[in-house]
Length: 365
Image (cartoon, rainbow, N blue to C red):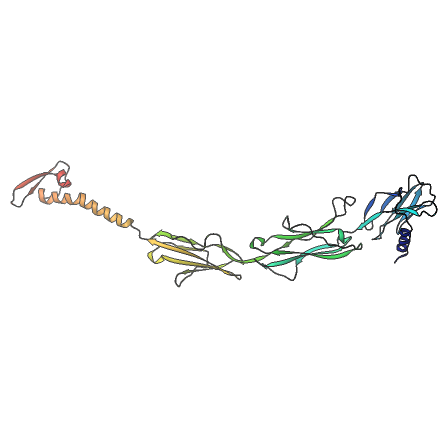
């Protein structure tokens, strides 16, 4: 225990705590950065007649002007100091005194962020602990540490109950659950000394560098993993897309079930001209170091009936136009001359009797 502390103990022991006219400091509370100059004035009393006044301090000097005492410090080197302004009352009535609350602060030397017991990429759905290391800050009991994900604070600021006045170091932690949305985000922590309205405004702040998170997760398909049947006409192109999102980037394997392996290592399977053999169930497996996701497609290849329709049209054309023309040529005229509507064609029945018929009626019959 220092001599000053012994003096303060004895001084407080013989002090009358019921003084009606106690000394008043201006300001009533002092906040000063370690190494900076500071000062405060004490109005000893307004109505007392005492000739015994004074100011006890561990650092600095003081001057007296009537009932006002000015305390000045050129270089605040003490971490825990509290000047006492006092005056003596009547004989055997003790002393009246007031303590000046002095907070000496120092911003952190450094603030850094990392993970506790972990290095390298994280894995989705796993829990990890962020840590923020704050070195040499005072007073540590006034320190508030906030973790950030990008610009978003991760809950309220954290503090530690610590009455130590001298600089100290502390570690603050926060548990997080990693997800694929965290891949690539920036984590950081901010250390802020909250020293009240008497302290500097805005409060002293030191931030860590940003920590970029890498999260590995198995491939995930954006749509359903089982698709409704896909119908394609024979001869048309077929394109199946099973693109997935994953970290690390996935590789792809296509299979025409039950066991026919298809060559392309791509999220898209393209067939230029679909045929009946291309119908069936396709399985696309997207894989990386974390896991595998499988997407299935049911493809139905229907026949292309357009050629059949064209053939049928040609047949109908032959039956309706060309055949009656040949009948007219060989039966009626003995040679082929394309008939015109209204021309008369002759036919003979089984008895050899000649019959006449208008070409229009022949066509219609």
